[in-house]
Every structure is written in C-alpha cells, then in structure tokens.
Length: 593
Ligand SMILES: Cc1cc2nc3c(=O)[nH]c(=O)nc-3n(C[C@H](O)[C@H](O)[C@H](O)COP(=O)(O)OP(=O)(O)OC[C@H]3O[C@@H](n4cnc5c(N)ncnc54)[C@H](O)[C@@H]3O)c2cc1C
View 1 (cartoon, rainbow, N blue to C red):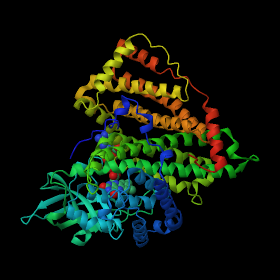
View 2: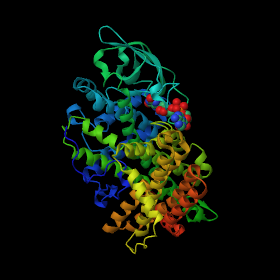
View 3: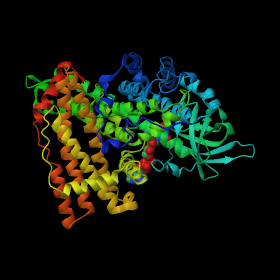
C-alpha cells in the first residue's frame, strides 16, 4: 500500500508546531448538500420515531430497541462508515459525525446504536477477513443482527489488557472461552459480540462470538444513573466454543483492535456531545425566553445571558474541533490510494489522529456536562423534575466522561502521544522547544501590527502553543522516560493542548465565516473571542502550576518571566460578547450556528 504523499494535510498533533492552512480546515459551514441531507434524515428519524419511544425504551422494551435499530438500518444510519460492498453506504467521516451529532438528543438509543455501528461494525470492517465481513456486516448493517463490544471486566476497565477472560486453543484450531465481561452496552439482547480474551491466558485477542454458539448468557440489567433506555449487563462466557474462523485479527494483537476502535469511538463520542450541547442550548434559550420572573423573561437578566453566552462559546469550540478532526481524517483517507472495500486507509487515519480523537472526547464530554448543568440551573426547579428533559439529559451524559476510556486516561494519552511522536522524530517537538527557549531568552520581538479580524486571537493562540511547548519541553527534559509517572504535570499539559486545539479550531472557523461575511459572521467572531479570552487564563494557570511542580528557585523565576512575556493577552469585554450571543440564541430559540 503506497504511503501518504500529500504533505499539505497536517499530521496528527502537527498543529502544535505549524498553523494549518486555513482553507484546509473543515468547518460546518462547508457541508455539502449530501451532508445536509443525511443530517436531516437522522434528525427526522430521531424526532419522529426515537424520541416518542424513549419512555418505552426506558422500561427496557428491547423488542422496540431492535425494531428501531432495524429502522436505522433501513435508513442507512448503521452503515455510514462501511462501503456498499458490505451493505453500507460508504460516506465520509463528516457524514458519520453528523449522524452522531443528530442522535445525541436521544442519548439512550444513541448508546445502543453506537455499540452497533461503531463498536461492533468498525472492528469487523477494519480487522475482519473477507469472509467474516461478508458473513456479518450486511446483517449488522441492516439491523437484523444486534452487536455488542465486550472488552471491560469487573477487574479491568481502564486497564483493559488486564482481562481475565481466557480462550483455550483446541486441537482443531477452535477456541473455548470462559470469563465474565462487565457493563456491556446491548448486553441484554445482542446476537453478536466482539469479545476480548487471552489465548492460553497470555495473548490478548479479539473474537467474534455469536450468542447462538451456546454458553453465552447475559447478567441482569444494571441500575444506572442514566441511559435507562439502553441495555447494560454483564456477559458471562461459560465454555463457549468459538470456531477458528471467528478469530478477529491475529492472536496476541487484540490491543490493535481495541485501541483503534476506541480512537474511532472517541471521535464519534465528541461529535455526539457536540450535538447534545446544542440541543441543551435550544432548551435553555427557549425556556429563558418564556419563563418570566419579577415581570420579565429570565432571558433579560445578565446572569442568565452570561450562562447562555458561555454555553454557546464552549459548544462552538467543540463543534469546530470535531468538524476539523473529521476533515483531517477524510483528507488523509482521501489522499491514501486504497480500494474502497479495504479498511486499511481508515485504520491508518484513525491512528494518525488519535490525539485529536482524545481531545474531542474530553472537550466534548466536559463541555456537554457544563452545558447540561447550566441547562438545569436555567430551568430552576423545573430543571430538577422529570416533567422537563433537562434532568434526563444531565443523568444520561455523565457516563461520557467514563466510557470510551475515562477522561483521565484520555488526558494521559494527549501529551503522551505527542511525547512519543517527538521521541520517534515524527513530530519535532524537542527541536521546537529548544528554539523557543533561545527565542525567549533573546530580546522581545516587536508586536505584530496586524489588526485584521481576529488577529489578537491568532496571536494569543500562537502564544498558547509556545506555552504548551515550554511545558512539554520542560517535562520531557526534566523527567525523560519517567514522565509517565508525573500524571499531575501531564494533566496540566493535556489541558493546555486541549485549549490550543479548541481555541484554534474556533478561531479558524470564525475567520472563515468573516470572509464570507454572512449574517452570523460577527457572532462567529464573538464566540471565538470569548473562548480565546478565557482559554488564555486557563492556559496560564495550568502552565504556572506545571512549571512550579518541575523546577524551583532561579530556574522557575526565569520560566515564569518567559511565561509572562507569552501571556500578555489583553482582556476584552466578554460581557458584551456573551450578551450578544445569548440574545441571538433567545431570539432564535436555540443554537444558531
Ligand atoms: C453505561 C456504561 C456502558 C458501558 N459500555 C461498555 C461496553 O459496551 N463495552 C465495554 O467493554 N465496556 C463498557 N463500559 C465500561 C467502561 O468502558 C469502563 O467503565 C471504563 O473503561 C472505566 O473502567 P472502570 O469502570 O473499571 O474504572 P477504573 O478503570 O477502575 O477507573 C476508576 C478511576 O480511576 C482512574 N484511573 C484508572 N486507571 C488510571 C491510571 N492509570 N491513571 C490515572 N487514573 C486512572 C479512572 O480514570 C477513574 O477515574 C460501559 C460502562 C458504562 C458505565
């Protein structure tokens, strides 16, 4: 397979060192008619068929869940990422993102659908043999079969490779599986499971296991905080005989299957959270416009306008970064010569953008929780009772920070992958950090006279990147291979990198919108400016804490002086900007980008 030759597509993490070519950054404003159509199909299906069924799903009506999955299959929603040869519709990752975004309003069913379309179909498409794909994919994509992904166990969640489930190799080449998986989405009624087990107690391996093989049973439904309309059970494997041809990938290579599926799942989860945040903003804006206190709509109070403005600015940044990531993945797949029926180009792209996928997961899930918390607050007492959807959204969303790799594990991965690529030489962070050190010890360069729209924000982002490089460079220099033991410093580094990617994605999008100069152009700029302004304070605070943990005395003083030079971001009047954002949302009764 020829390797990528188009060097204009940024590699994973490269944005830290080089600003991207603005026209190469994908934004929601660049959606095609085909993208809009798939979005509309998904939104109408959710509104007309899933939302009215949510109460019955919450009563654990799994026959209905099956029926809805079938309908998803008929509409092509399960096969967005899979070529037609296997019964899919073979669209790009932007389409895939849009489907997740639109399903977010029905989080319980979205979990069931994600376990099928992302966690079962993806490993089969990326790692299955031709006959495995032919056998399982068409029936999974039509919704005839329901899938589940069985990785976690009671003793091994984050530490997935510590699984205790065993696969004993038999003389005829088949395997006998024994063990117990935990918290499996669709566990109560799935037909096909991607199960991870250790061959001969040692080699972590993926298998395709049918319930019909016998010996596989579901535990009782878990009593969860939220997602009551999705099935979550233990899956017990007792002497399950799995034929040799149901080995997925290679013996001992289960980690490749597990981690690449997670890269994809994280990116999709970020997209779902982005859609969920927008849906909550719709609810808040509508409620704030209609609820009156002290003779006025609550939307007229500054405290409420601040909340709505902030919800929009954060949701805007997440939306911008998930579309940017989808655009990168699509561009990379498109630039890699490959056969459409072959998943290897997608696999390489998902690995390449693992850092961005983790950022999408963490930023998406934390923004969503922030927005949903404020949504309850704006609803007051009505936010706390079941008559309004605000409380259900709040409960449903909390798990996003836990599954698909907890946010702590994802935060460890973000600087961890950057550092690994730096050591391998694919991302020249060490050289860039060294050059920066020399630059900061020299005289201050003259201030950039550029006063084009968002020039101050672009300067601020350049400073965030230098701050990230200072922190990462210092951490790698201070701890070397021991860096993995310094989790607190890594967490600060991750927070800075998340803000860099989020702020840059928002600003590039707003810049593109200002060039088109449509009716929303100034609101795009308002959202980006609020986000960058606040990110500046977070970035500086994280950098100060990380530096003080690594060095002290004169070295710390020198580093802090350099940081001060970088952190001279002039504060702006965000009160006015948030008010404008909030007023526009209230007038339109929702998120308007
Ligand atoms: C509703 C629901 C649906 C799920 N669906 C599925 C599914 O379909 N398939 C599946 O396989 N699994 C599923 N899971 C399981 C989920 O993926 C795990 O719960 C998750 O990976 C976390 O594992 P854990 O619960 O064992 O937590 P732990 O790993 O025990 O983590 C506990 C805490 O310790 C932290 N921690 C752990 N290790 C480290 C470390 N090295 N450094 C720093 N902090 C650390 C974590 O971040 C967390 O805060 C589901 C879970 C839920 C709740």
